[in-house]
Picture 1 (cartoon, rainbow, N blue to C red):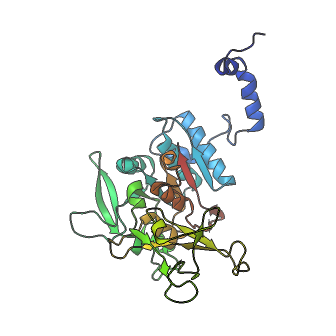
Picture 2 (cartoon, rainbow, N blue to C red; picture 1 turned 90 degrees about the vertical axis):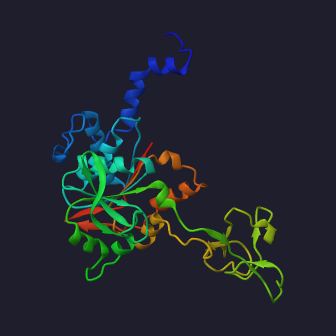
Picture 3 (spheres, one colour; picture 1 turned 30 degrees about the vertical axis):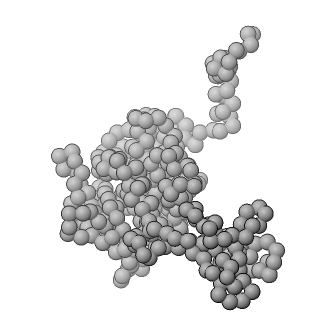
Length: 336
């Protein structure tokens, strides 16, 4: 048997053996011969066989875990796969889905949802502010498909209004009384991360043994950063957001629980605004059943602002909600 000269030759020579080993180690959750869910046939657009297998595979993943990922090339129908998986996993019951996508494809997502899901209502989250009658777009606006174009028609509300339960047991049940059919909320990635301006937060002690020194407002003690424990000065606070964890390590506070202490805060002297995704994560727990992240490979850097908002999306505090014996949990889709 000739020795392969490159990795390509090796893979080509042992493709069958490698394929069998992969199937033995990682058996598919939904095989090619397994019958698909009858709910797929109720989609307004019929997916191809490969897309049907991906939909069923993602649905099987959600039965065992709370997150799944769709990795495919451009044009393979990842949007159709995600919408079809949400429709199939919900088993015909009303649901709420949150989609965070790049700003230039938000209308495409709205159009795809209206053309794919039966009896669906689609909403665009334009901003956190309340809906107004001006020319600018604010709040949460329902969109519809008119002559192949997305237009804002129907219900106009806001996130601050949706989080209120009023006379209902919860905000989610109040929304179910308003919208008894599946609903999809689409928000642009740039709008989702648009938050407040910030500034550094530290004190200069005016009395005590640290008089004249820079101290942490939470502990009243100097701030030590770095491996060598260097003491920070005011000139060390530049553009980066600094923070420290109190109660970790040796010292007087060794017995207390660790406390994250940010050394930055919102700047009230500049434009006051709140990131919609952060607002949803803090004040709307349990409202959304599904979350879809589009093009998340562009946000894998956690040090960037967009990467931070992606982590906020993954950390939405959605408790399990049981409906007719079925559990809907925190479900995220990542597209690469």
